[in-house]
Amino acid sequence: MAPAASKLRAEAGLEPLPRRALSQYLRLLRLYPVLTKAATSGILSALGNFLAQLIEKKQKKENCSQKLDVSGPLRYAIYGREPLSLVNLRKRNLESGEEELTSRLDHCKAKATRHIFLIRHSQYHVDASLEKDRTLTPLGREQAELTGLRLASLGLKFNKIVHSSMTRAVETTDIISKHLPGVCKVSTDLLREGAPIEPDPPVSHWKPEAVQYYEDGARIEAAFRNYIHRADAKQQEDSYEIFICHANVIRYIVCRALQFPPEGWLRLSLNNGSITHLVVRPDGRVALRALGDTGFMPPDKISRS
Image 1 (cartoon, rainbow, N blue to C red):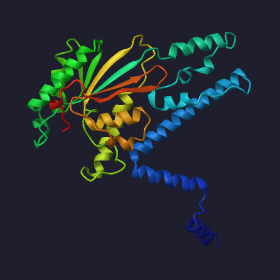
Image 2 (image 1 turned 90 degrees about the vertical axis):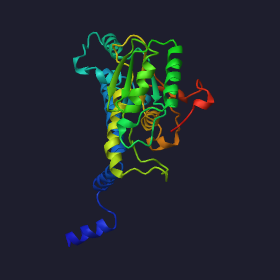
Image 3 (image 1 turned 180 degrees about the vertical axis):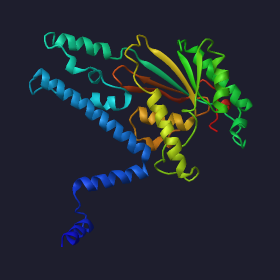
Image 4 (image 1 turned 60 degrees about the vertical axis):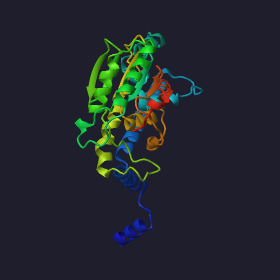
């Protein structure tokens, strides 16, 4: 009778809650692997931050009116660790108490702001069969010159240029860097073009193979986590960094940085050679100062190929 009763409960949807929850989680993992893993990582990180706060509150024996910081764990889940999570509370000297803890927290806090300039490569020959032959068009080379002039005119002390290893991004970087002498260049495969996540709503004109989302999605998510974060605690001055890559990568990064649903990335449109400006403040808050700016280009030089 017991097996029959168990089967009846299963057919009626009455399995134990943990089993149903696990089944739903595994289903999401199959359908949306990158998003599910990213969400899981963020939730676990936020819970860890909450736990650190609870431990600290208990040890200090604070009154119950003390409120927990909710915004902190949300920022911690995406833009780097909160200072409290970097302090080993077990090594705290109870005699020095609050002063010592405050000093240690200050040592772990970010002090500088990161300015991130995301540049889309210029127009290129889209019909070439091999990636190495997808070089910039004459118009694309003009666009890169205009973008380089624009960046130079800002009068900022750029720290570095990180660029995709694809041909069109490398050529765009070479032209732009001529206007920024002395700024080091770093090539990376993480920023190569790809399919970050299945767009919602879907579009009819662009339907890559499902396997692309698995291969490209994890890589582009890794690029986001590697490059978009608050400044290191040791950084004393604001930094200005340039990333030259591709439309899909930039659109996905913008959605993730602003904590928007990443599936909406394809709703954004970026011109060739455009400038997108993100600001990551010391507390982890992110601001979008410009999205796909090409106002510095004459109208006849603007394209979106």
